[in-house]
Length: 64
Image (cartoon, rainbow, N blue to C red; front, side):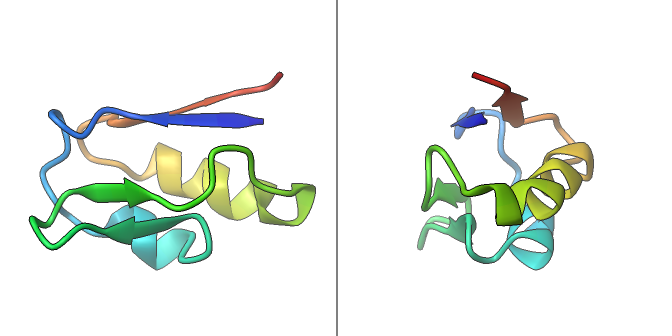
């Protein structure tokens, strides 16, 4: 699983941090900050939930 983020599209809702705090944080500017590019399997569900709950689809998850 590989995560990509579109920081330009991000509106800083914080949903990603709420659902997957081990994978995402918020930069001081409020936009998404990816902490892990390829999370462990134990973070899979949280990561997918975070991506699904992004209001502007700024998070993409690809299985590698």
